[in-house]
Image: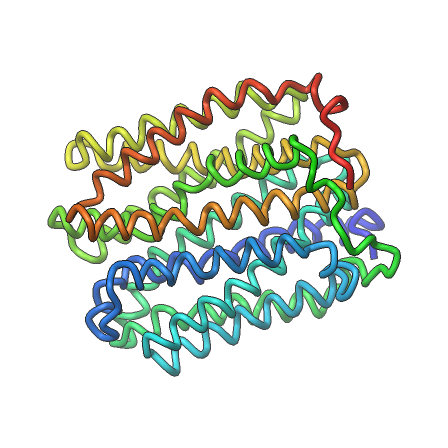
Length: 394
């Protein structure tokens, strides 16, 4: 069933983008506000704790790199259903078995589920929302970020209510179950296509690698903030709930940016001005966390959130711009996300390593600031005039 075949189908398509997006970040962001209790109960070090964020992102990268094969073997319907099932089982296991080893295994399982969904959704957006691709990408990105913020805010609440930190992680099986039931009920998503080429041919193309590196570096700050922002402010004397609420506050501005900036992008084809604004917001936010974290914490977090929310949506949109054909665009997006998420996976691990090495998170904000400044310079090469000359083979 095409999302464009009826009014009900169109509404269902928009609703599904929201529901799917909401399930893609709780597996990451539910950890951070409860990290102190988790480390106390399991004995995990800072570096080992960082793996709870890094491992899902590694899965996102590896699965995305074989996204074309996933589409060929499973199709959107079975692939997305399998991804939701894996997220559900990971959350259930975290609730029932709270050991450190269980957390690491479920990080892999849930990350693979998230990766399956993320690998399949961009091509679906390009095909089903071909007249509204920027807006659809914005809705999907905003929902994804909203899920992360809700998990950061509500996980401590659930842990307090049930009087166990495991519940704060496991309760996110409920939205996964709801999404799985909705996905099974609505006949949406393409079936497997045996004609899909099971290999990506753009690996030697410089533009494909540039897009992938760019996607990874402009978005890597999100993983570090999700993993360590509450811990940073707890080190500065904040409590568990106030520090966790900072992630939720950041999410508000991520959602605003993820919705607003793609709508503005709908009016033109040059993504660079909006990307410059987004990266500048990130830069100022990181500098604020570095120089004056206690003076205007909500301002710095808002700027980081706005910049990160916009960069995720706009960098994916920039990638899709390079092909008119939905399948080719999806293959490129899968490659870009694959390499990009592997880069993202390094970020929280690096932050944890720097924290253990130096005793503070200051050096991590320095690294992120330098990275965004470098990406401000790189952005200039993505002129729309280069899309054809730098066309990426599918």
